[in-house]
Amino acid sequence: MQAPEDRTSAKERRAIFLSYRRSDSAPWTGRLAADLRRYFGKERVYLDIDSNLPARDYVGELERALLASRAAIAVLGPDWLSSSNDQGQRRLDEPADLVRVELETALRHGKAVIPVLVGGAVMPPGPELPPSLQTLSRLQAVRLADADWPYDFGRLLETLEGHGVLPASAADAASPGEPTLLTTRRYERRLQASRRRAFDALTGAVELLRYPIIEVAPEAAMVTFHARRGGAVSAAVVDADPGHSTVVLKLPSVKTGAVAGASVALAFATGGFSLAAVPALLAWQRRFAVGFFDNVEGVLEGRGVGEDSSLLPGVHAWRNRRREV
Image (cartoon, rainbow, N blue to C red; front, side, top):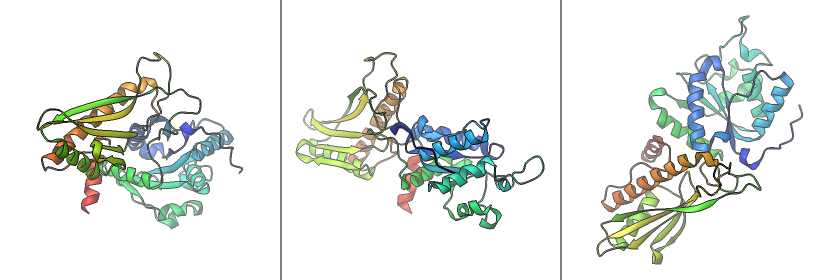
């Protein structure tokens, strides 16, 4: 089969394709898709191509979606391997089975395929799979347990990052020619510490949170770094009163009210928001700023850092646990 021409826009690239069987894992897949979309952006997660399309159109749409994806997640529930049709035949043994076609297509195009086990499922043995899918049994799976979902989801994010699947960057969040209305949003907090002590705590928090550092300017008491879900962030310490300092945090943001009612793509590295999603972006920025200031104070007071507020709730638990192992 000839692969269709890749006409995906920059906004569609680095997406995730979700493969699942409705009768086997629909509830878990719905929850997973919602979490992935909150982290990567709605348009970067492919789910539920219209299965009512004619077979030829479906395969063409499937290949276009997979060509636009960095990774395919195969959601395997307890009945994924044994699911059968009305005649009692195992679905995976049918060459036209949609789940089989999805995974065969992903493997044929060299996409990263990540098995995700839900509902107590285990990896299927190779001999029990069709020859075209036996590679699946040799792949490293990620388990998503209901009781440990936030932790396990963090592990899945780590696996996706290892395959180059990251939240959208400023370079590809908007399509060429789309206007972007960027500004800088400022947050600050007053600390009971000298400028030097506050700057040491500031840089210490950035290092402990493992944010990639772009530049440190001791003479200006400023550090520039990348938050995990955002673009370049700058933080600086300025003098206030004797024995007190103010930490100023500046984040790239979007101008509100400049083009009221327009659909303007935001070139900010949190997943390609539209103007309608600005309230969610601002809420994330406030949450990040408050959590970041709390971590700076924690380092200043000798308590270290707590939750990484740039991540989804619960993901920090995975990162901390991984460091301790």
